[in-house]
Image (cartoon, rainbow, N blue to C red):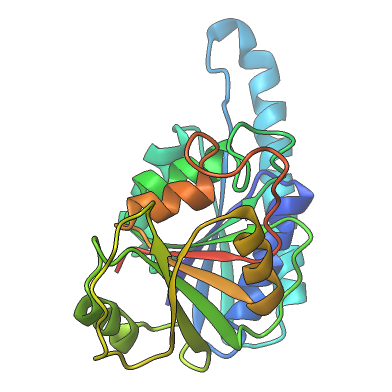
Length: 255
């Protein structure tokens, strides 16, 4: 398995790296640690460029070494990627070059960014990169995800498709899934009984519901094509106000 961890050397991204190692503790994994740095290649900046490059590489190598020491399994291997491309371009290149299966990214505080839960960069990655992504909140320590909540919009994701996703999911096999059917306004959805896993009665997605989800579950599982649910969770324009925080990881599934 090939896994990409995004780092900007912050506590939040360092925490996401440790969560990734813990989450995949029993799997054979090649971890690729990606840092994106905006180097100034103009001629007048050439004197300081070498120093900046060496300093950034040293910081990235230190991150790789720290994760290597943190990782207990011998199944884990680590290397570094330093890029001066834009965020999305650098990730897309890594996806192809390294055959990435899963991405981990830190979810910063909404007090620092416009998007209240994941922050600007993580939201952009979730919406533009078609790869499975786990966004890990700062300060969130790993706890085996024994209970997973799966919010679904039946107008977008039919029951059979929900079941098919879970049947072929490579992660969270030991977790107990609960489907949470999200009610959109006054829309009534047909009641379908051919489900393989528990589900809740359709409910409106409120702040109180989100607080309750975080009390009851260890991780939130969202399908990337459920754009309305992604936006409720991830974007301030459609979702929660700046008072809301996320305390458990969000797994965005792209297949």
